[in-house]
Length: 309
Image 1 (spheres, rainbow, N blue to C red):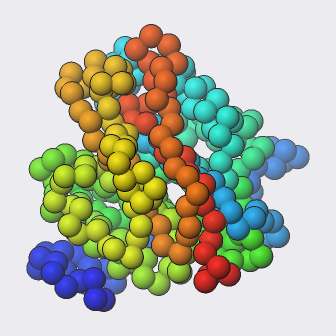
Image 2: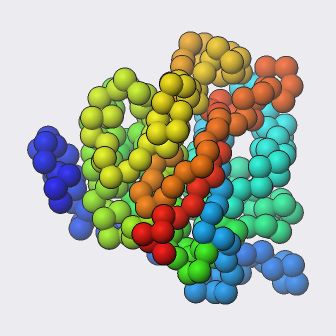
């Protein structure tokens, strides 16, 4: 593992512990809603179904923190319908959602547009309870095999993976996570990143990893990013700030947190993939002082590199 060079002792120790953490890794298939039985049924990535080797992806932290539900601006009913409207307008091939609570999971799994279009990584909303009521949900137009890896940390963060095939059977791994939050948890996030990179070494050549990484462009964690993974926003739009938390635009976030914040916490990284575009979405209010989330989302279009066909 050449990338381990230069890591602090505790980060190296975190990587070494991956073998032990595998015991905290779960394997599963994806699920597709069946209208006849009115139930979500298992489908592995071997099942026949495909999309072209060019694809689109949507990622967003959808603000599901249970401790915030009592806030008058949480407005779950309004925001949840706005998320569906946004997804319908973008029609992405892959959807990566973070901060999914049991309430969010129940809503999404019961919505006809999700049932009609996507395979999902989880069908039991209560599974999120074990992760302090928050986790990730992957939606995909193609069936996949799923993995969940425990990253530990203060908030028991997890890594969610979807292994699928697109185009003419080329493998693609889609990954999402939300790392530990809080400025004071830099070393915790660095350890989680090290664990993720070590784990992904055996997960294929074409990988897209997107989510809420909980650190900005000027933070120490950037020095520990694996250069094999392209930061898509910085590659395609190097002169744009790309803030995905921006209280200057998102007044809902300012009113809830009572603090000014402009950071690029949400990112898309990849290897073995070529990108055509990336854009910030969810920047417009859906009503007075209400946005889809306190984060903006990212929408990108990409294709597999010929090298990996």
